[in-house]
Image (cartoon, rainbow, N blue to C red; front, top):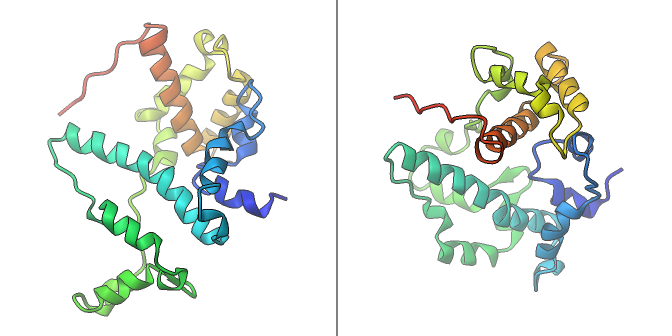
Length: 212
């Protein structure tokens, strides 16, 4: 089993660590977690419980990556995005709040929802959460969509690519296309890495123009 203290370290990963390691030829015995472990050694955080540590790790790892995507996508479409909940003064104040004001029982965002009750109907505050996930699993099964990029992993150019087990990657592609497993998140990373390599390192691929 996985040590309890590592649960927070792996919290924001999009795939099982063993699956990720299986496609890499390099040794990744946890070195990628060194930065996260260093965050947990921050003054004052070592005295916090696992839930608070996980929140802090998300703030320092997942949130910056999400903001990067937000910034790039909004700028690409001439939209000025704002994230008022991430004002540094609000974050610093929230980090000092006791955990019971953030999570109470199975109810998260407790303080925010109690405050929201002053301005919005209760059914709005406590309705089922609806995420903004994209159906990459389905898209990769469609050869007319981004599924066409999966053919790259069977080409000689990829089979000679250092750092990856091409046979294992092709196995993951077959599992995903057959619907026996959902590897959309891992395939998204692998496809983007390969496209980047062909465009900027090999210089064998010209980026597709952005369509209106």
